[in-house]
Amino acid sequence: MAKIELFPELIEKFKRLKDLDISENRKNILQPLINYIQLQKDAGQPARLNFICTHNSRRSQLGQVWAQAISGMYGIDTQCFSGGTEETAFFINSIQALERAGFKVNSREGQNPKVEIYYSEFEEPLICFSKVYDAPENPSENFAALMTCSHADEKCPIIAGSDIRIPLDYKDPKEFDGTPIAAYKYDERSDQIASEMIYVFQNIN
Image 1 (cartoon, one colour):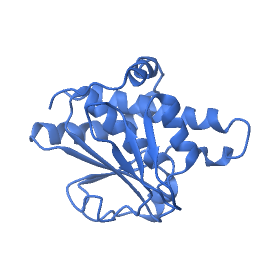
Image 2 (cartoon, one colour):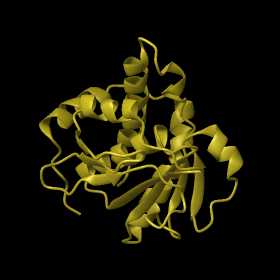
Image 3 (tube, helix red, strand yellow):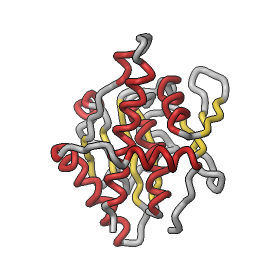
Image 4 (cartoon, one colour):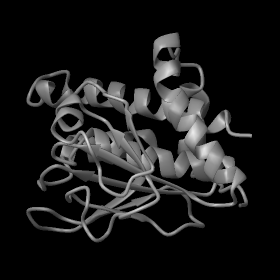
């Protein structure tokens, strides 16, 4: 798969994110994901990744978007999805964090709007909205279930059809909603997820 050229703003963001420190503990947590993607690549198959959280509104959406963009930048054939244990909506603070990072966003109206996320002028946008993890839009087999929150991890010990289930457990920025530091905390979580996806994909041979 050819490497994808991201928007210039995302390339600059990527350069800054590469310098973020990732602890040895987090690297150990990410290693099964690296192994899975490498296995799929060696088999000539796309790595299908489903990021799963409770509401599919914050962390799982950030995971899907960043993983798709970064895997494309590295030329790794990856199909990224997200879902929740229940359907709500793609939360505005998460969308705005992606906009600040350099993604271009077009959002429709409604209680659970479909949000177009662009990361390259040469690629179709990701269509993001809140859905349950086993919704028809998501894969039903041959995928990695990436549990981005502890609640969903505990509530769904088995994800039917998945090849592997990997708990990533990111802290929820939701607790800062409505506070003066909400934007900072959402950017912080977005940056962490992005930097860890960079670490994952740069370790695929």
